[in-house]
Length: 323
Ligand SMILES: [Fe+2]
Image (tube, rainbow, N blue to C red):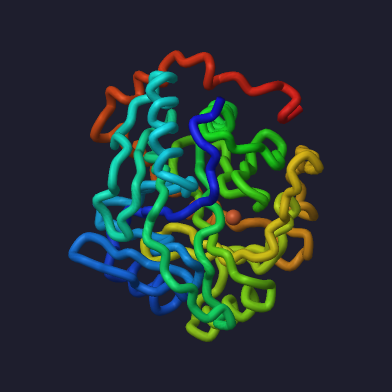
């Protein structure tokens, strides 16, 4: 039994050595709005109801801070803590009021590659903003580079209850926690890092106007615009001032449980770029997406890695999932 039933991806924290420039980029160019900022952090929102969707934190090098998922009630957070304990999985923060902007009630734990996962409920909501503007509603998915895609998929399906929507050969796996085709995707890579963060535009028109707005400011996509096969979503990938990849996307496939057939897509140009507008990803975009090796929470707490050293129950992936 998974530890919780995830409601949605709530927010992402990114660590950057370029806090001021990155905050200006996401606020002035990308279309988010600063909710709060202090010397070492900035919190930004989209037009949707989430208090913030992106936290930027000053750091020596790029990294992933926290991936925060919403659950419905504090009681579900407490239950998740009991189930983590029963599985012998260590928590970084026991369930309780979150000492952060936006408050809420939550807990934090680590995944097998040191990423920090937060489950939270009762975080402050904010009044939605005008959706006519070509700016993001919020964060819609995060793609993570993993050194062991089977292990990552096993952990997120078994422990977090996510479902595999599709595979892209044995290179990428797309995982959902609600009707969106994917909220998390894993990409097999040579080191652990964040590959990119995607921001939802309300429609394809908003998506194109958003890309046009960036173009007017002299910023062109690293890759795109185009439409992917897996997920059917539009894509336009850009590099932020820290060199991290951010994506405008829209029209992600909606999954009806019990009717969706998970399949394995071939990695051919006509399926990764359905419109034929984007062409293959360049060396430059691949390099940005590879990022820098990120030990996450294991940097400060290397002993946590040992909790995953020989955990057969998180290593089982049914063969048919990606046959
Ligand atoms: Fe994406």
